[in-house]
Every structure is written in structure tokens, then in C-alpha cells.
Length: 386
Image (tube, rainbow, N blue to C red; front, side, top):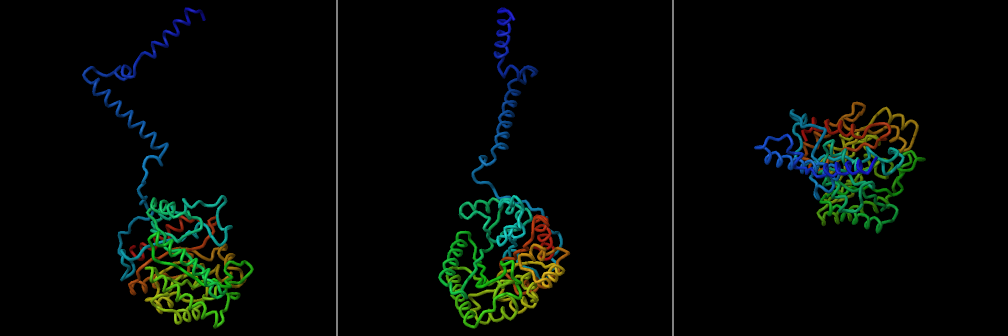
């Protein structure tokens, strides 16, 4: 290219650069519309830029995001099947994270593991109001509260494993006070406890029903004295202790529950009704509900697949192995064998107030946690109207 041609080319480029944006925008606009047209186009350009910025950097768009209130479970237009049913202002529905992953057995999870953000988001999507605390969730209180607030969730309860029968009173008290302080910061009142002295539910070499600990009279006295003390401390702090009978522990069957209730202070030590653990241990959940309806202050709604339970008992496999085989499922699953309607009806008749928490330890490699959560929430909405 000659110097002259290069000069012409450069001059052409310069001339192109000399056209201001306004000239381009006015090219096809009638004279009387030009001022208005330019203004509108500038506004549209600003909106476009803001939109791109928001999509690219959503976290910077607002410092205080509003809670996500979307639910996959739509309100029911029908009357509740229970009559009477629960007071919507006094009963909350929660779900535990054990349907997504299991803190007692890290192998019960996906690979890579399910992130806590997904667990909390799917709980909210299914229409639940809270969750049991989990080791997967943020342990720093401000971060946890921020994640919960984003999804309009809260924590229904922490879990405290007491060790009174092993002589570990000081360690137990220290952990209880820690969890009590945690619930104060969260704004909750329920603290779930179970005596885990010599428990075998986490031992894969043990049959949870036959190898469970049998406490001596001295150990029973240690445990009930300690629980009465914790219950009194909880009450003085505006909290409520709820005892959880648990498979593979020293308090798992009906005679254990009756003895525990008889030797603890009714106003300080309440009972957690876990339908699945009772059924697993050969106890009728409905019978326990009728007997202790006025003392039940926390509920775990856990379903059982009877065929899996029968096989687990026959083979004498561990509690964790039974979970992996699918012994537990959610309320509303047609493969489950627990009848929840009469149990919930008894609680409603007793004017139960507090949490109804869906719990089903399941392997997410074999079943979909969100789908199960939606099944349970839909079932409970139709049954209770909540």
C-alpha cells in the first residue's frame, strides 16, 4: 500500500471515529422526535448496563437479600383431614438434613458431597420452616443466621448426647450449656437430648436391638438425676429439654420410656416422640402418644419400610447398615408402614404446640432427597392443613 493510500485509510478511520454516538442514534429519527428519541435510547442503554451488572454480580446488587419464599408445595384448597387439627400459629414444620447426608456415617452422601447450601435451599423449596442443626451447616453463628434468613428458615433443635451413665457429668453439662447458648442466639427454645452412654447405634459390628446397653439401677439413678438437673437449667433459661428414646441406646423400648418418665420431673423433662425409632424397637407410636400426649413437646415424623426392617432384624445387621438398606422413609411414602393420621390426631386433640419435624435417614445415591421432602410436605399439608 502506498503512503497516499495509507493516508487515505487513516483519514477514513479518523472520520469514522469522528461520528458521535448521538449522530448514529439520530440517523433515522424524524427531526421533531430526535430529542425524545435520544433520551429514551439513553435510558434503555442505562437499564441494559444495570441489568448486565446485576446478572454478572448478583451478590453486589443488594447487601440484604430478601428471603426466598418459593415452595414447590402449593397451598391446599381442601379442608384438613384431621378434625380437630393443629393451630397454624403454634405448630411449625421442619425437616432434618439426614435425608441428604448422615453425620453418623459420612459414606451416606453423594460424591462429591452435597453442599449445605443445596440442603437448605431444597428444604425451603419443599415448604419447610426449619431444620435440625447439622455439622455440615456453618458453625459461625452470623454466617449460619445469614444463610437461614436468605431461605426464611430457622433451627428447630440441636442434638446433645449425654454421658451420665459413664460418669461424664461435667462434660455433659458443658456441652448442654454450649447448645443452650447456641439456641438463644438462634431464637429457639427446644434442646433434644439422648443418653449415649455405651450406645451401639454407630457401631457397624453391633445388633442395635440385642447389643444395646442395659443400665444398672445406679446408672439409671445417675441418668435421671442428671436429666432433672439439665431440665431445671433449661427451664430457668426459657428453654425446654426433650428426651429422645433412640435405637441402640439404654432408653429405646416402652419399659425404658415408662421408667424414664416416672423418674424425671414432668415440668422439666419432656418427651420427644420419634415414630420411627419407636417402631424399630417394637413399640407402638400411637400407644406412646396416647399415654404421654401432654408430656410430648417435640416430634420426629419418621416412616419405616417394614420389609427392610424385617430383613434387618432377621440378619441382625447394624443400625447404620439398616439405614443404607432403606429402612427409613418419609411420611406419605406409600412404601412406608406407619399410620400417621391417628398419631397426629391424638397430638392435635391434646393441643400440641411446637415442631413437627420430618426425619428419614436415607442414602441420596438411592433416592432423591428433594422429591422425598416434597412428598412429606404435601402429605402433611393435606393431612393437617399446615
